[in-house]
Image 1 (cartoon, rainbow, N blue to C red):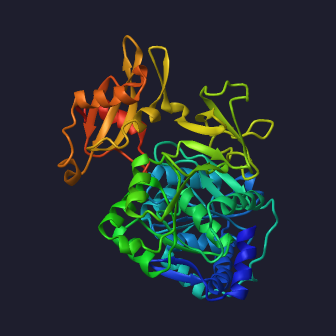
Image 2 (cartoon, helix red, strand yellow):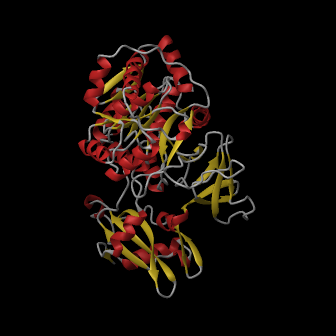
Image 3 (cartoon, rainbow, N blue to C red):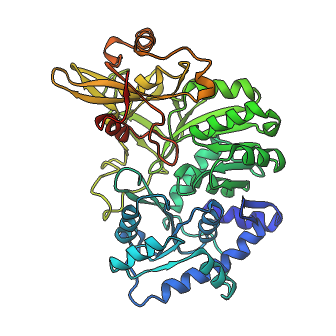
Length: 508
């Protein structure tokens, strides 16, 4: 596993190099190695002290699972990094998930130790008869200080699991899957070859470490000998200061955070003068964000990558709205069984060394791979001139009047329309056509809307007819102050449709 080998090497040659930095703590590489000995000794003792420990999911081959469910990005990152050099499986569970989701994944995967400051979680687990241990962060730190250190971390076997990840958790029951060290070695090889987490580079990765984009940024930085700054959330002023004062040249963040950064840079570009590269993923990148970054910080490059937590990094886009992807040489992509005509949409399948073996059977009966090793998370796309054009998930396709309509393509047509902050296309039932396409708009902030033309149904229809095929033009229009979003900034299509169905959106 490259993270441990690199951490040990950098701790020997550059012991004072900063490894992880947060608003509530700092760790050099030497400290990361030294502290990991006490953390693992503490965690190992807690697992061993359980009289009837939860049985970890069989896919772990008996390795105990330790989960972190804290709002502190620094503490979450350091626990996962420090356990990586030992026989341990780590998981980050978002404390903002619904309580039943958190309890469900802990019970179903056999997590034995949870570091959490949530009394509700501890009470709910006890009520379910869970036999593991819940520990607050304060209790963990106290025990670490009183525990004899374990042996030094070592580079572990390739096929040993070390990370437990989740596919969702905001709107549906999470599906869990494991990453082995071999799989993550392959993932780091891809990202380091294309996304530039280079030795000594200082990266800012704001947001919950339970979000796979942030977690991968933490691990890839340590695996390549860089420094990663984490933040519980993206505060434009505070993180702008950190970019200016801490030598940060690279930011890894979801598009919603990049938008906030562009707004902050517009007000105070000097805070971002050191920045060289922005890497984004996790959602389609609106063209307006790329254009805005180019205007306020013209020297900063932007890479929009595409990947799936289960599969790994797949490709990236360095122009446009991030939907036309150059697939990396290290992976292979095809639409359906490979016989779908070029330009036709279908299910995207990927063959990649970084792909997980499958989902934890106790959390879902869904299959990730077919018998030949090709994997899909049911993203839809088409091949265009040798590149992959992303459409969306299977649920993002609506059939109206016999036509297949990709809802994300409808949304992208409104990117850049004055007065529109964001848009979500939904399918609504219709007695004649089966379903119709409707568009729900999030209006721009007041200071922007004041200088924009009035948005009404006629203006929206005219805008759509200039940019969309007739069957793609929405038949109904709605407006809300704020579209529902995930923690990572993705718009929740299902919840948006529910707003409309409950009459909570203004019809235009």
